[in-house]
Image (cartoon, rainbow, N blue to C red):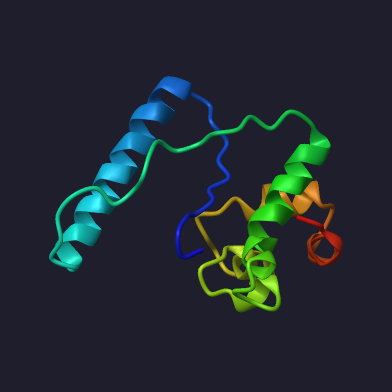
Length: 121
């Protein structure tokens, strides 16, 4: 998305997560500022975090993230948006994303793809 991004993370240690996300934002901002010869804040406001409360919410969050750019009119299908992790799930390559956990949640790759076709964001 041109004006925001989504991360779906499993947090095991809230205190270290808060420190880590702060460091991520600072490092990313410094890198962008250096690359584009700019100064100042890159992000507006604090990040938003939501707790996954149930199984339906887990499924909805994943399909929402992958379909968000489709709903915004930036892509016709999730796989058409180059900044999405969606294609990472489709490829049989190593990645830092825990694909196995997510694909297991959907039962298999076919069900994952199908859930994204019928998902309403």
